Image 1: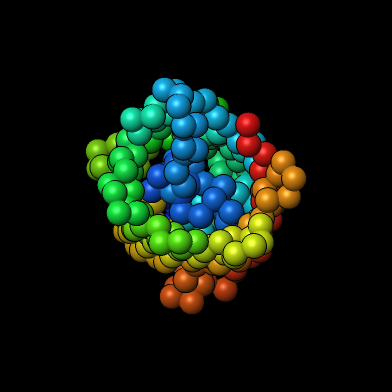
Image 2: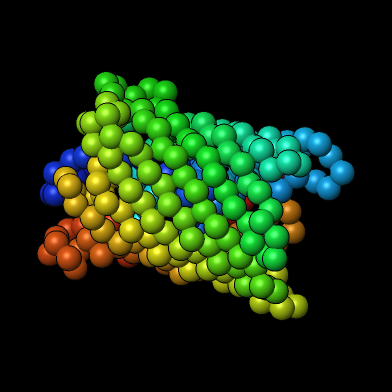
Amino acid sequence: MPKLPLVAALLLLAAAPAFAQDADPSADATANSTPPGEDGPVAPTEGRALTLSGTVYGVSDYRFRGLTQSAEDPALQATLNLEHRSGLYAGVWGSTLKGLGDYGDAELDLYVGYRPDLGAGFSGDLGAVYYYYPDGRGDTDFGEIYGSVGHTIGPFDAKLGIAYAPEGQRGLAGDDSLYLFTDLSAGIPTTPFTLKAHVGYSDGALAAFDDGDYVDYSLGAEAAVGPATVGLSYINTDIRNRLGVKDAAGADGTVVATVSFGF
């Protein structure tokens, strides 16, 4: 994803895992409504070889790895995912954008991957995502590969993941980018609520400043309310504290509300 223009103006603009996040299709969907790579696709219905599913989201602020992609304003998002019972999947994730200059007003993430069941409560995810900006000006598009391992014990889920954008891509000015993350979630028994936590580390072309690195984190909850899923998360980065930026708008702490409908 592109980086935050205001922070970049202060710290040196660089091109912006999907994502998706998630790395698997987003890190923490409640907090970010992320693209592929950071929040896994819907599992196929048992007995069907192929399952087509989708989700429509409304978010009060589209945050990608802690940084706003909508100028701290609401955004509309949607995903369409096709998955085979073998674990192979492909799909597209899209969002409105605001305030990102050459990246335009829309983002489409095209992804493909494989989610094997590793047994004993473990699962894996390997895939690739291409960030496409339909009305972007100049070299804005780029690709990223991702992988993660998750483990489930009762109501608890944990995941460790990595996303890497190789060097040599014009959309990243020839540099590479690395993102490491961990997600934790726990359902509260006898309630519709799930608690979520996320920590991520960015280094390289997609960090908040040239050849820099930063940490993003979030803590939130979501609940099923009729046909909808609603969520509330606190999201922040360490950019303000580490760099001494007084006005880190779009990279500092905020509460993000999410509502989604799956089909």
